[in-house]
Length: 115
Image (cartoon, rainbow, N blue to C red; front, side):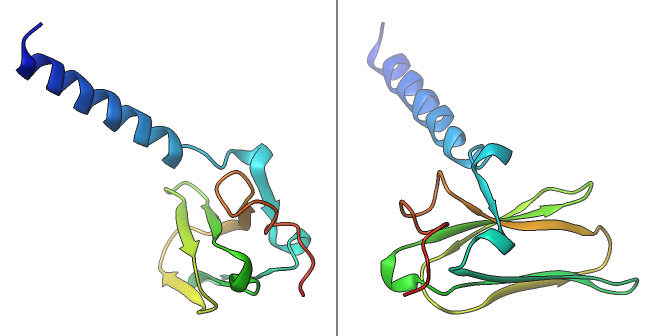
């Protein structure tokens, strides 16, 4: 195999491996906002405005990856590395839930009690 083909195959393999991380946070790894003491999150579903907010209350202990599950639309994934509130509002599809991704966040942060 030539050097060009080998390089191309390695780039494709690296690209596919990276996609696996984005596909993570399946339902079995989601901790609902009501069960995650370190996650301060809210949902707004109104006829004229839909949105979500999230804040990592335990940012001193690590990064929290949050999944905003939207109905009939691509989900949003937020990486909360500090204690700043993240929010997004939009017209259209409703928000189903906001959850902490236990497989992508710093180990244990989704279920740890607030210090």
